[in-house]
Image (tube, rainbow, N blue to C red):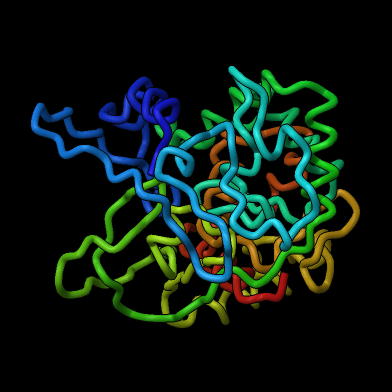
Length: 321
């Protein structure tokens, strides 16, 4: 369910144009072009929807309003600042719309819950200065973040950073090792079941999907994700994360802490979306993310293969955030 403003931006994003270089499509999920409007289109069902453990109800139009984050569980987080709950028209969408009121985020963006406020500020500055982008220019969430970063005020940004830093992240992703996965398609800038029968080899991929697609589309911040990863990848990732492997990389625990909960300026990695982690490793390796705080990551990612990135991300996603 998407608001008119987001649909308009999707239409301007050039969704049908090819990317300049191949990227792992499953990490940089790009929506297919929207079908042309039909003269015989069925009117939208505007009945109010509900989700479990909530006494609230929202219509599809309300769920799709980028300037009003659907807050199904207001008792699950502190009072949201105005910029988090509603944004600032016309240029700054509600932070809680994409990243959710409890900061858990989704595969197409970042989990902000528990990140240091200083780190959040630095990343928005990198987006603003063009030092943080995407290796897939059609990946709209990164494009939108760059636009918001250039328009958000210093005061609003500081309030949002303090808010998300105050939140406690929770287990959000279940990791399953497997050789085969259901067939998928891209919708809402993430992978969802295609509805086709049969399975296909997972290969060197991470297939991260909503546990309950309807609740995820309603932006229920208590409905998480399942990540299917190659058999053996979690164990391989643990070796790379803890030791760096034989000349492959540098142990992550050295900078990000023994439990990967973050250390000094290095952000916490435990329990984060594996699709997101692969996307960031790939972006750093390919120069799409090159802010001052990222430069220390150049050496660790230089020799990583895509399979290495998959293994690292798979292991990190199994950890308690």
